[in-house]
Picture 1 (cartoon, rainbow, N blue to C red):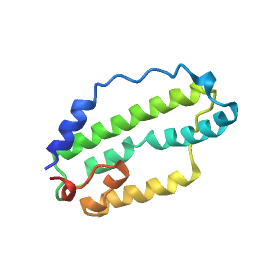
Picture 2: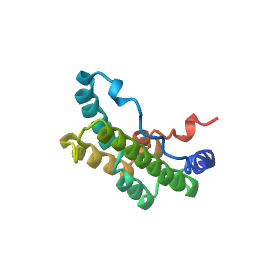
Picture 3: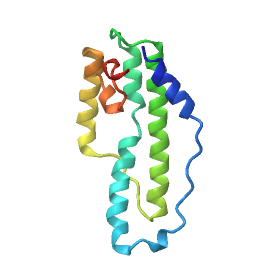
Picture 4: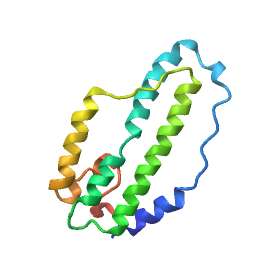
Length: 137
């Protein structure tokens, strides 16, 4: 049922990271601080979601098969890739990475509860942006 997504993430897993921008000096100075703040928040959101994937690994939800588990693990790895790219951008612009966001802790706890108690369409799959089987063609 989830073979398409497993194959998609397996195919894209080995892509190289993009190079650092070479024309940062052309960016208006006034843009750097707000851009760094925005990218740092985005970077934080892209990192650290492996815990949710492990919660789903332990859950017994109908419709979740081995391909789903592999696809989800590969998706989380892809999110980590995004986090590393964004971290490089923030550092390249002279910014500082965030360590945590206060609102994130409550949100993560709610997602973990959903992973243990709800059907697949309500599981934290929507957070992971992987469509449920109803969206596949």
